[in-house]
Image 1 (cartoon, rainbow, N blue to C red):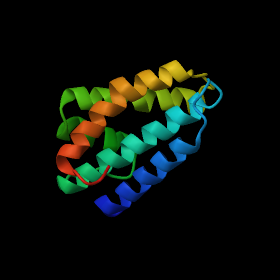
Image 2: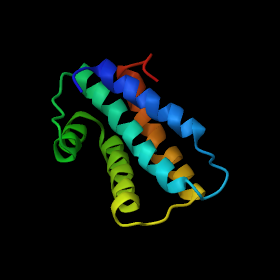
Image 3: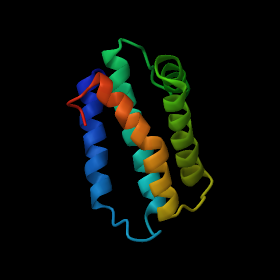
Image 4: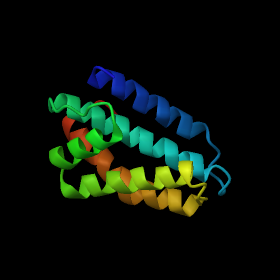
Length: 123
């Protein structure tokens, strides 16, 4: 994606999709976890654009950019979301609504707060 706005649009798209997933039990907690990670990815990518930091086109380059541009707490939260989404997607690990809520509260929320410092109107 070429601009911060491109990433913001995608992050909002992911947020809208999350709002459609019935999160009343564990049934779709795995997909909600994956979408939550991608929402964080696009929000942080938008902030990297604003900071004029190259995030490349791979997870490895983006992970390195996040690590160098943001506080350690944010990069650790991003790493946890990334790792959990990979486990859910590629290792067929199950997920629970409680785990999704924990990831949202403990990892996504700090990312959202950091992004709002750079892009107050983005989220």
